[in-house]
Length: 101
Image 1 (tube, rainbow, N blue to C red):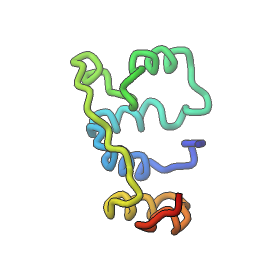
Image 2: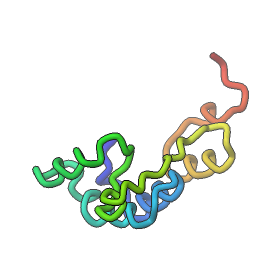
Image 3: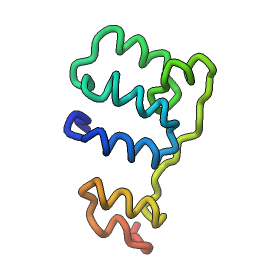
Image 4: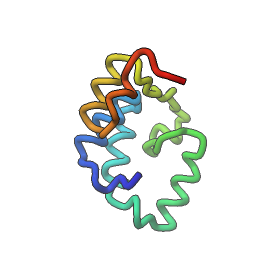
């Protein structure tokens, strides 16, 4: 996924929906979201420190090991459905309660 096409609003809402702390969302937006396709060695070193977190933590949370569990979207949950339909081009059949296997 190419993240540069998404707005600050998208990053903020997606982060909140995923249960990421506001301070980490702010850090991502300010230091990473614009550089996703052009990361420097400093970016890569920082990402290595966040390995296993499933999100980019701000320096304060990282130093305190304030790691939070990330909410994973489930198409059957109404809150996730509304969020995903607003932002992502997902076919309607993904949201049906009785999916064929």
